[in-house]
Image (cartoon, rainbow, N blue to C red; front, side):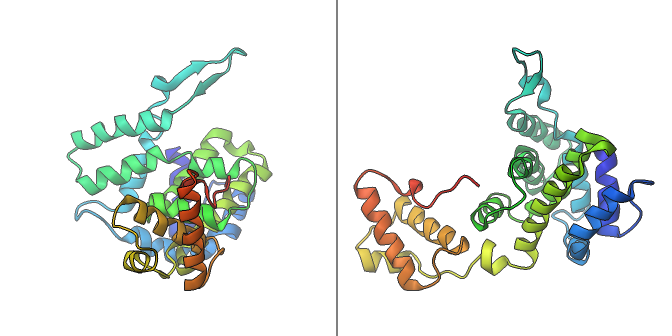
Length: 263
């Protein structure tokens, strides 16, 4: 994975040569993601520790991302191996290793987050190359700016799995998912990642006579997700959604079942 990660970093961030002799893979990657090179250069020029940059943390996560596979290994009836939850096991092991290296808490959190979530883009690309606005919102709600790092790690992981013989359609799906995610973060952040807040907790308390508590936060998050998904755009639509959610909740359905989708 590290070899491919370095090649991808050189291509997409530094703008240098990628995978000698493999112009198809490089061309597809450049065509899909090359427009984000200036954004990626700024992103990876930042750091969360004075002595280490984000590139180093990305490569550290790349080194350890599959470290949980031995713990998760299971042989299926057909003789094939599967590694269920290896991402979770790997994050736990990586956290211990990172702390042994005396990395700072933000660095440890960044590395473990990348490893714990490193299958997320693969899942999004497994059936389709179109990512819903809701999925983009949920992705960055979970990963925040580390979601940018994960795009490179996931692409490298895909190439490490398939090698240069990767089916072009499979590579294209992975690239397209990453393009939509990077577009959401760099170009449409106020639309799909961090939309301007329509209502707040005080508004709900006044309008619906609610009390402060976890349920209030869940209602606000449901509104924000629906807004990011393009389902609501105005304050009145936000209030209408909250009214519906409260009604559903009072009937025992809960807010988490409203407005969800598979991807």
